[in-house]
Length: 74
Image (cartoon, rainbow, N blue to C red; front, side):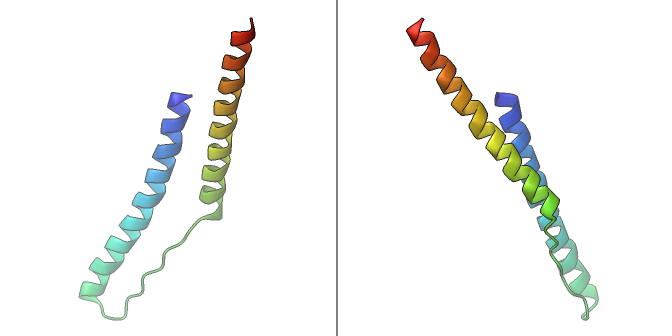
């Protein structure tokens, strides 16, 4: 569970890093060429993957809570 949560955070960090890298390169390019344009592309696949991973984390936490509750009855 803990490792999967780290995987989600790494995926989010990679998405943010990609956006910051695009912005940084765009501003650097604009300092040399005035006709440059910055475009941030948000890939729908990455956003969907992050949302599905968050759903799985929620389900794993709920399953862990149910398991702990069932252990109390035994």
